[in-house]
Image (tube, rainbow, N blue to C red; front, side, top):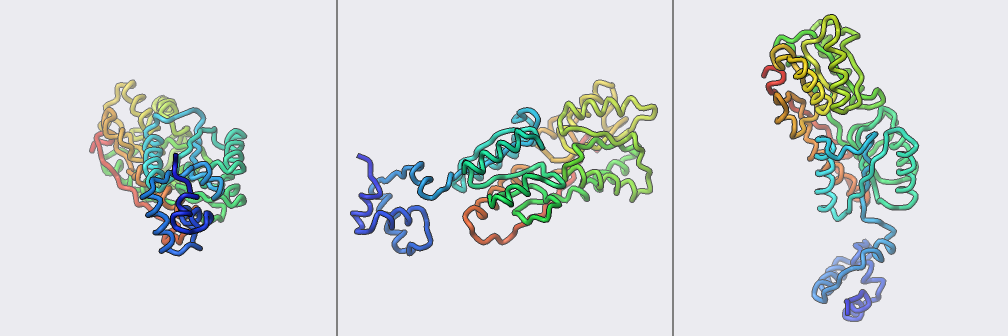
Length: 337
């Protein structure tokens, strides 16, 4: 017969409510009593009924993440590393990780957020691909649902976050290709609503301006953060009467597509044309040729976001609500390094 809370209460001459609250970590139970209860539970072989515990505490012990993508992209290098970091840290913090996908800014995305929040399926959520003005930030703030995010929207909401210095990371990338003699520099970006698009495009423009160079309108292309988008945009750029001899991409996945298009055009990458990305995903070192990229530690960022969210969910003091990451330039053969 399995051991119950009632058995522990009888052994320690405590009320069932006191044992339950001690096991759930409530602050109104003294440390001495909590220690007695935990020790007795271990000695007696007590295994908590998780469903009952969640019902008592009105907690799901689950962290949610809804990938903002138009189609499942679990094999995407960026998302696989991000999810790996969240999964490892969620387990360490004692949470399950619930993942879904939905097209960004869509009714489907809104419906999933509403279902998870209103149904208490998750105790908090991790957000990435933050928009300059993000409905998710505003909604979760209004619903008093804890969340953390990669980047800070301009909605005036203070939430636990990690921010990457995208602007200066891209300025350094422009400086690098200029130093290697590439002066016709193009940029393939992402959706205009994204904060990373605004910051990285601004860094590209500032890098050109600092060198006294003119930005050619035809050299700025929109992408969708996928290798397919990078491939298509590169084909457009290479078909120009005076094509660029350097293509800087908003993320590594876009750059993988650009590499493929340049290889198809029989261009000597790193000599006739330079191609670079941003993210520093592991696969970038194994591309053909290896990709120069601005490295942000995706796995560690994801772990940090879960750490911050766990603190927020538990209502504990948070020393830092904003962490700034200075990305590093990884020089490889795709830019002649």
